[in-house]
Image (cartoon, rainbow, N blue to C red; front, top):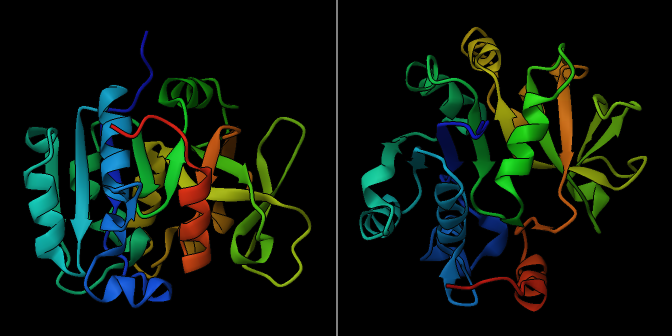
Length: 240
């Protein structure tokens, strides 16, 4: 039995200010690694793994993202959601609540990073999560802990504490900003109109309700020119 979510939200509206001047003319989600846009890696990975439809939100340079999606081989399975004013990653989930509810678990990812993982294994981990957990967070080992959300887990792999971009975090196990969430989390976000950023405003209040899935293959937060260069040097998987 497949546990793969039916719906994915690929968060693609970010400004990418730390990647300027590259992002002066290119949206961050279309920054290229080995000639292929970041969003392209995400679409290929999740669609091939069984996601039925992906929602891609737009804000900054939306016409470029729209053109890319419309010419993608997955175009007939992509729904675009434009935000005239940026809603924040939690705000996007809130705005999409009616499209996500009734569909079962949803896959949520920041599509302007680069990640290689087994969605079937991630989905199976979520299906086997402790009964109190409402979502499963992908984690990875970061080489820049102060720039990430560092998590502390209990022995069963449930998040107990989150240290969101603090100067001296207690470790290097980080939130990859990739999640499988139950509808209860969508409803929680919808019921909290003040939450804006998913990782900052949704993840910490629900500590104790997040299971984790460790990505030991590859994950790189493409937040800076340095990180982009590292991703170019490190990435060695299928580039089709």
